[in-house]
Length: 208
Image (cartoon, rainbow, N blue to C red; front, side, top):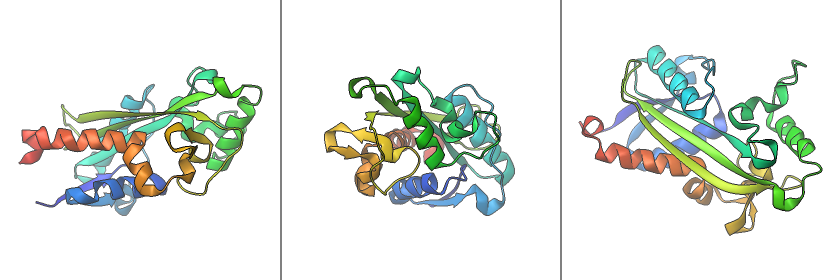
């Protein structure tokens, strides 16, 4: 049975990845933008809190089940920053300048300018939340983690966000140099979605 599902994001790159990964599961996937739903205010202090806020917001405004993720980059040399503020990293200095991928990457490289290679360890985190409705008391929650390190200069044209700076040791390249199919299989988002689909198969609620 085909189900309709709204993805609680305005990020085109993130939406494309999720749609691609969910394609085999017969979901009729919609962006919240199709319903003119604005982004929720991310007032949580953790990835899981923000993902729940976004999923509940999308459910409330569309009446459909909603899938939300909150994800970001944790850099050990920066005590876990930019973390939950990854998408807004370059707009946190009070200047009012809007954050972009390019500005975020530039700010991160500047922050790590004096940090040697062996200390540039980092990881992408992703928390996925699937809610049946806005009052769902038992949302499905899954997490994926992708270990790597930050390079000294961007490389690659694929992906989005910090992908050009994130070195994937097993493949000898940055995330932005990976083919989409490979990235979707091994990334933090791919891992979280795999766990989510496994949870869906095991859930009597979602099998109905």
